[in-house]
Length: 417
Figure (cartoon, rainbow, N blue to C red):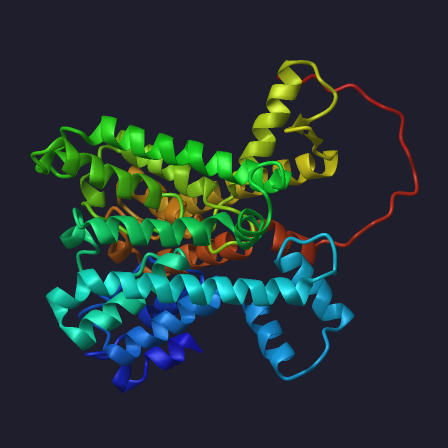
């Protein structure tokens, strides 16, 4: 539907191809941000509005949006719809599902309206009242939903040192990326002691990854004349390192030239993009809690513990197996996509790998290779974006058939390591 709308004459300055429209709509609804057309110069206001609506629907979640409409019409949520919604929101119970959906809706509205009002302070002086307001609304929607789309051709490089942009945009995509369950916990429950294990792991994991991203960006790019080295003061370099270090995992905005990054920094960003944000959020990737569970399982193994626990709570074996399956499927997916693009394209390996990692993490950062993709390459990236947004395990659960084991076999020995 998004592609069909973007093909209409009022949406673009010049006609675009069906593949351009399909790629753009896929990137928008999966809140990725990879673009084969210029959002500022190739799309009219109406085309940008279509992209913004697709971003909102993709970030909010089509199941969540459907339940909002369902409940607004006064209809009750059936068992089948409850099952789908429970899986979509990563909940273990049917209780308060509709209430959680309305909580998500309120968080989205409050955050995006507040973000747009604050961004107006930066955009209106440069672009006027009407254009500045639209830029503020679009970037607020894009930031909260971790999409990375921008109505400015060079991204946010023109606002690299703007204090409002460097505060509001990261705040929006961090809140959107940690997940609605975490936001509800932090808002409604007492500090730390009242928080669930999931919330604690997400807060600590997000903090650690942010410190790693910002710190290593500053260290690796400090003297690079194409990125941080172009700024004279240490404060300016740290400001850009802050923005680029925290945006990498989820949002995909850029305040510097991504194509100018050192290969070492690009490799760091690929790892951060693959990790992504939190479950039940607007972010992609394998998720922070998945990595946290695997780290805890590794520590337990090295310490010869049979139980996996954190903060006085044990982690079930089923969750560990789920984390292992997710990482294995994600690794196989990324490897296959990189192999297919390397086989069909002549680009640099680091550029291709970066593009795939960005698509899987629904981040949207690119080393300038998106425009070099053939139609086959675009189809591969579109598939990776889709799987990165809905989650590889979601597809696996729908395709798999639950089987109850009727036979228990004697234990065997397998040599590992």
